[in-house]
Image 1: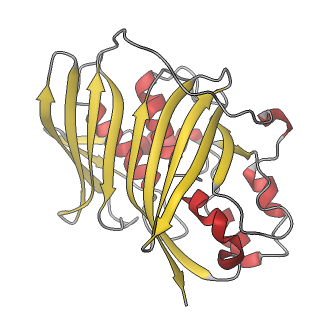
Image 2: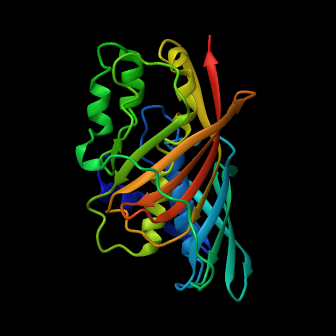
Length: 286
């Protein structure tokens, strides 16, 4: 994904029936549909079927089959419930008549209530950090295969600035904690709904990779397969994705070829704007 304009065109689906939409794909180097694309498009489809005063507060999705980049994705939205405060939608993404992804999205009216949050981690400012692309250059000669794999997923639609220089010098087994600043600087004059969709797309970057940190010595020399199994997000407070957001991630567990990662997303003022969680399949190949 080379630009924000291309990403916005990708997320906006074509209506082809009653609560049915069609989405195109961008060609990934790994030849499968990028999970973040499906998350963003599914959220867009759900948003087209709810009143304008309802905003997503959570969605929970499962990746069922790998998506084919050469085939458009059909999104079917079911109206599950329209309540006084909450609206629920189910979205099924299909290719060749088979479901490749399903999710439930819950929307809510803006309402007053209790308010608290955890503190943002004390990390350095993004202004003094290198981008992910700049950090990758430092391992290009030492770990060429790992460099090729990681650089293939870079995007110009967002700017990522990792706090921990985890790729600098020799890779080690380290604790599964990571902090990354991110923004899409050109995302101005967009409605909150689109900021939700952009963040859903971006949420599939970095998160599952946090589960690899305790195994750096293994993955730097071995081939491995990684794929998302499920993904969940909660939108707590309004935000603007053109401003810096800190994504604080950890991976509490990996077992049975699966790993779980979690993330808390703060704006520069320390306000917690969203949370996310993802479980993925990770297999070290012989």
